[in-house]
Amino acid sequence: MSASYILKRIALVFYTLFVVSVLVFGITQILPADAAVMMLGENATTEALDALRNQMGLNDPIWQQYLHWAGGVLQGDFGQSLRTGQPVGPALFSALGTSLTLAVFSLCFMLVIAVPIGVIAAVRRGKAADLVVGLISYIGVSLPEFVTATLAVALIADWWGILPPAGYIPLSEDFWGGLQRLVLPVLVVSVMMIAHVSRMVRSELVDVLHSDYIRAARLKGLRPRRVLLRHGLRNALLPTITIVALDVGYLLGGVIVVEEIFSIPGIGRALMTAIQARDLPVIQAGVMIMAATYSIVNFAADLMYAWLDKRIQYD
Image (cartoon, rainbow, N blue to C red; front, side, top):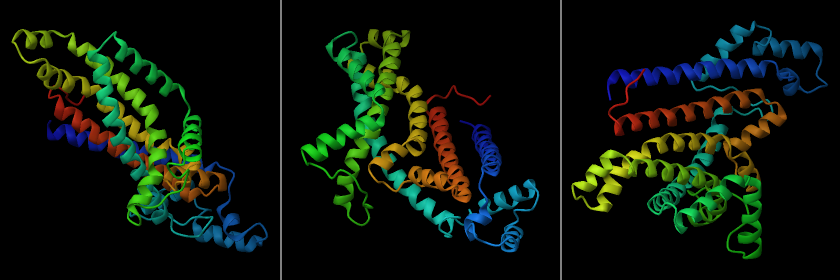
């Protein structure tokens, strides 16, 4: 992996974030929301509204407003919430930490379950284990999250009473209590990802196990387990890295339903609240933080992909 490859991938990340920033700022400008009215109220006088608009630069040309906003973002200043009047950055980064906690636990749980059952399905291709894994995967993909969450809460929390039905406690405050409240959301979020990744591992591993170099390794007399783990699984996991990176983006942006059902104060829930209240600074900052996180995860996945497969070059 060359330094040129890394630099070009970093440049691509910054270019992506620049395009996202232009789109996000442009879209929020056409939303039917007046920041001055939201801050002073609908009963404010015209003079007061004009004075606040001049103070906030809302009467400046759009490109000047964008440069002012982008300059603040580059310095870590995301502005103030129109709804609460508080700085946007600390609140959203706290929510991002909550979402990342859920994402990390879900990702670890998914990998622990999905990779082994994908390997079992590939090795037992066409047999009962393969059919069972396939059936479970199709069911997992087909079930919407609100259905999975409803079933989990009804069975595990309400009926059996094993776990609390909702709520969030930071692990730093009460590790055991917080862990108990993470189990159900992690299970719900992981179901669809386990289905995706296990099918990917199974499909790629089946192809790899029928390749010429695997036959050559077997003819050399290598042990079946070594052929499977060292020569087969390593190559089969390469495409899976891309799927896992995409799933991380889904975890950060697509778990709004799960955060709402389980009352988790994550960034998806914060963004949804901001959209409902037309809180433009929070919407802009939330989308930029999620885009940056998603870009960094994909950047890391690209580096890992290139590290595992030396043939990959930037083009």
